[in-house]
Image (cartoon, rainbow, N blue to C red; front, side, top):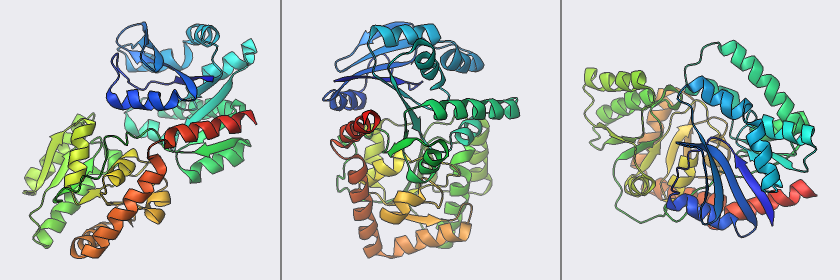
Length: 374
């Protein structure tokens, strides 16, 4: 069995939830799994099927990036040596820098995987407010060029952008989604009503567009059902703007319910009739896989990461980004066509099961292992 290290800032917490336990239990059938990530303190903890090294997270945002991406060389090098790591999976091209430097400078016989979750640079620069954006953009491109040229394989989540990276850097690639807990997200055959948004309330997700156009739709066609918005609001200014818009325009049937745990999200997906999305950037949205496992169809923007496979093979109705008429017409057609609702529900379930059903995550990693050593 190979020793597989996941290197990234994913927040697992000192006590793993049931979903993460199931993820590492599945991987443990063929890999010894390790993780290095941020935590509240410096500690190394052995869970049932994974050993996690937690690095104390600095309070300053800039130093968080500097520490993890550039200042952990000795810690990471010692861990790789002590644990006899065979494969390092870096969460993004920047976090791949230190593993690649360790491999080159210390002649370590390790394989480097770079995870690719869509347009990394745009996702990074649009999720927070950064100073010196041009400097960050240039340095990120330089580092990414170096790491992609020196990695062993690219693990993408969607085919379009990943294949272009593969061609650019002449690297092997494989595409499969991030872990999805198929034990939680199930089609429970609950009576469906209302519309649903799940995700962070930030500009990139187009929440204001959803509120404005759902409000127009519900008034135009006298719809009493609610648009339920479930998610955290890291951008307080944008969240307040959305709420003020609702009050100013007297929109009665949009409700914010805050961040929910996976079981609560699954129940919401099972009791809703349509998932609404308006993203301008995505990798391969896990929310569409989760909703599909619950038999919940969706309407989303016709962008990379959604167009394929969800728009072509799944139960997702597509509209051009920021096109209000297409958005409203798609909802109207969906509401008025029971047969379309059943067809999209079945297609969304079948695609999600194909992407992330039981055993899929392990089989995908097994395939990656074969590719990286052939």
